[in-house]
Image (cartoon, rainbow, N blue to C red):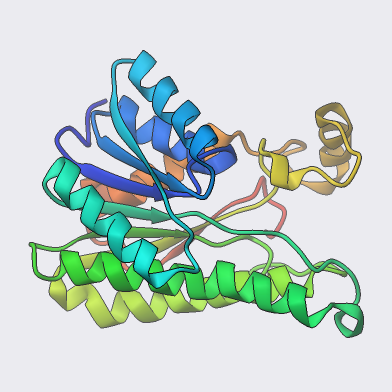
Length: 252
């Protein structure tokens, strides 16, 4: 398929895991990809994989908690590829495990700053370009933990991702009249490092998922990416403010 030929796509957190899978999937369908993240070496690896497959991409280092760097990121996307058609706000962190009363203020603030304020800041600068240039599409990566499901000892992360879901819907209502279509994807445990518990191997995770999800396995990163690409595609033209859960049935 070539649904995104000629489109400029920005993906944050593109150096590994789901972000990398999303960047590769867009490039495979013809998009020009801006791979953004904090670590230059991992972004270069993502770009190398895209280029080795015949795609086009550029790496831009950016911290989503830094408004100035995000402004530069959007500007670099426009400068390199002539515009910004699609943005996927995937960057996030997992910190502050433990009981609510035991979470440190430092961990709480770091998680909320990256996972919520980071998404808001990214949208702020993406929307600033899109609203004056014919519109666009934004897909935010939330989680099945938050609006859809809760577990013990993960309050900071759960709170942040529930906020991303709510923020996505609010932004969708605010900006659809400007031609900007905004949705979210909420993955569950997927074939990415963040879903591994401390000291757990991929084989251990696979065994655990046999009983923890109705499907009996994690979602492949490519399956989550497919949901993102659907929401970004013309086929989802009437989909506004949804939160698409891809979690092997865990929150069903």
